[in-house]
Length: 193
Image (cartoon, rainbow, N blue to C red):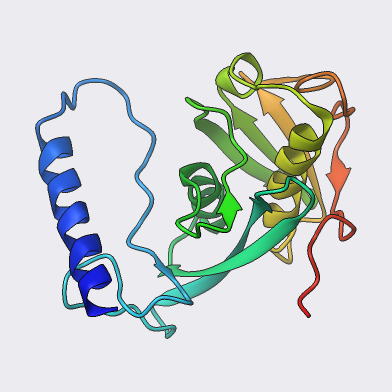
C-alpha cells in the first residue's frame, strides 16, 4: 500500500513537471481542484490528507461499470468553492482511477459553461461530445445518466439540459432524446449489496 502511494505521488510530480512546460497562452479549462476520493488515504499533495471539514465539501460523481450495464457513485472531498456543479462536471470529465469503473466522456470533451436557473442545470460541452462519441445505445445512456445523476446530487438541481456549443441538440449519437431537460434516473445506478 505504501509503495502504491509513493508511485502515485511520483506520477503526479512528473505530470506536474511535464505540464509546467506547456504553453499557457492557449485558453484552458480550469483544472480540477485538489481532490481526494473518500476511499483513498492521501490527498493530491505529498504528505497532505484532505479530510472533510469546514473548508471542504463532499460530492458524488457517477462512472460506468466495465460491462456498460450500470453507473456507480464515487464520493470526492474537494476544497469548498462557489461553483460546485462545475467542479463535479470537471471530475466526471477527468475520469475515475477505479480500475473497476470507466469514464463516460469521449476524448477531447471539455466543459464550456454551466449555469442553474429555476432548478434546471444548463451544462454546455464542446462539440467533441458528439464528434468523438463512439456511438452505441448503452454508452449514450450511461453518458447522459452520469451527467444528469451527478448534477442532480445537488439540492438546487432537479433537471439537466445538455447543450453542445451553446445549443440544444436532439441526441448525442442517435439513441436517446436529450432535446428537453432530463430528470434523474435511479434505474441505472448499481445498488450496493
